[in-house]
Length: 81
Image (cartoon, rainbow, N blue to C red):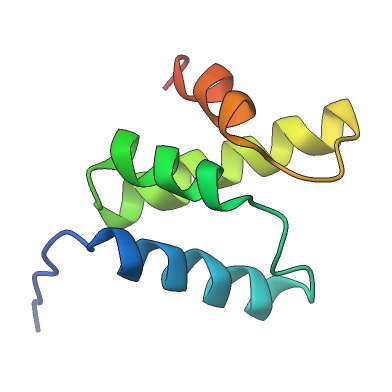
């Protein structure tokens, strides 16, 4: 069986990130709204790219001990993808 998912909209991207964070942890507010907008912009709504960028932001955030991922943080991490 094969399936093809088209790109998410900006709203769907925000819901997707929130749902994934909710499934993994109870900290659904880890990404600011501006950060989610940058993730959408850089990923073009493609699920695997949303996952990759979000995961790298969370990893870098853990290393740097940040309490919330903002748009500047996503831009900094995103330039290495």
